[in-house]
Length: 419
Ligand code: EPZ
Image (cartoon, rainbow, N blue to C red):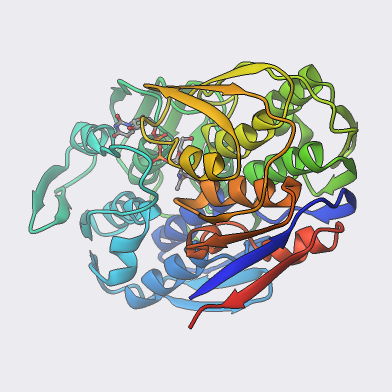
């Protein structure tokens, strides 16, 4: 086990390169198994535990997976199992994409119920509704989802809630279905568009991704392709917020500024200066920031995955801020940890009422989930004295080389083994 020890108080200055998007990569890798022929050569893959986990899972199903630096080559012609039931499958949320992908490839899938961050009830009813609408029979038995269809036939599906996972999963299943599938009330997140673009590069016929109506016309087969994953909107947002909190001037490279608009708009409202330049944004902060209200929403609204880092920033901003978390009902577990460092926050249901304090002080805290971990690192960076962040396996699931990236900006973070 390891922990991060952070000495707070330094400003952040310089440049940081953003990696490929986790939530795109963990869907694109399962999507690659639909290709019965040809190689998928995928670039800009982030070096994170969730990606390594998915790589092991698809290798275990019979694919040949060759990883080098930030790319991966997948040969799915040897895929020979529709049973995904290893410890890795149980561990991560995105393993549910194997259901849609295996259903497309074999008309059959058995996948253990997915795990992931404990941020609230994480139902898959909308995924199941979509598979059933396409003609599959879905049963949940012995902790696994079993899905089977004689054939999949395109149809209209109206999602009851906007769900990233259900949109992508049903899109995967529909790629080889007969006729046209229309997904209404679809999620519009950048990673939904990225998965659609990847599938189209493999020969799929998907139109409308990025709007709330996606049309998928089934094709005979998908084949390998070359593709590069989009930059990670959430990793970029995390570094923007860290720069705002610590003060200084940080240029965040390899981003799509359009994907960051809701985050930039909030930071500007607080008094941060932001300059866009092609595929980079520069964040300049003098740390004298005022509190704001934030409501998390599906894209293009303020992302729930940036809410926790943002709450740290609001803890040290002037006046009262309110955060309304509209996507996940238990995404405030980090607040108790922030309170150990002197934050003044009250929780009322899905709302956090934050009264800004002049300073946070170092403490021993936990990363209760992935983005909570990022929130605690930012807290440690601004706090007086030393902070120890425990349970950092959550952070390693989604942030590549986080201490190296921060240290290159002037932070002081050390990774220490715990015996
Ligand atoms: C994805 O989770 C992301 N994970 C999450 O990021 C992110 O918080 C979330 O989308 C929202 O943007 C991955 O992409 C692997 P949803 P997902 O289905 O797909 C409800 C991170 O930090 N819902 O869009 O599981 C659900 O309860 C992670 O990187 C249903 O009711 O989220 C939630 O309230 C954490 N029925 C809302 O929809 C369903 O069948 C949105 O969930 C599915 C979802």
